[in-house]
Length: 218
Image 1: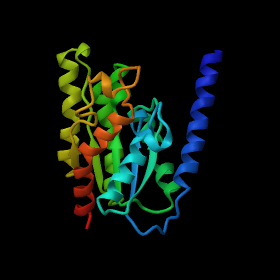
Image 2: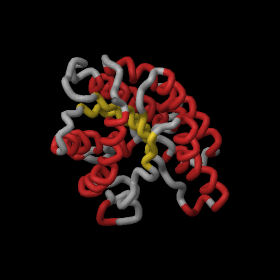
Image 3: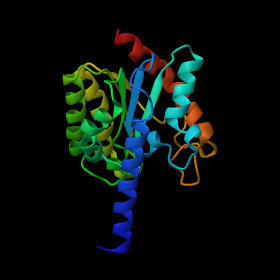
Image 4: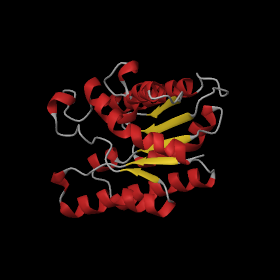
């Protein structure tokens, strides 16, 4: 195995261990609703301090709006839909209690690697089916394919999120990076990941959908 491959494997193991610690840090008997965000680097807060990431900012925004929620970070940078599916069950076990809502934000890395949209859809379908079987409410966060992948790929990729949401009767937030994508002043130097101000806009935009999803569970 090449040195870079070994480093990548070690880094992923470290990320998984940190994720286990993070999901075990909050008591299961907390008073407010428990939200688990299952995703990739956009959920994980890539390139940001912990307090600047999506889950921290979403938790703070919910509490300011009167919802004493706990939002647990289930994001791992670089994860595809297949990798998210592979860690779904142990991630749920690590929470210590059944979540009141799961935000599923996956698929961007499938798209960036040019993987078949049908493959990503099958993986997301399996994730949503398992959550439905467990009677766990879901907010599905959609993504959009890059224009350079062509209209055919884009049509298949972009439509899988609303199709899956309809299939399982789950709430859909159409585009996770709405209001941020393509705006350099809201992105980090890589042009893909939101900076702290960008995350703030993401959270502000998705907050009503999160609140409605929590209300619907009752």
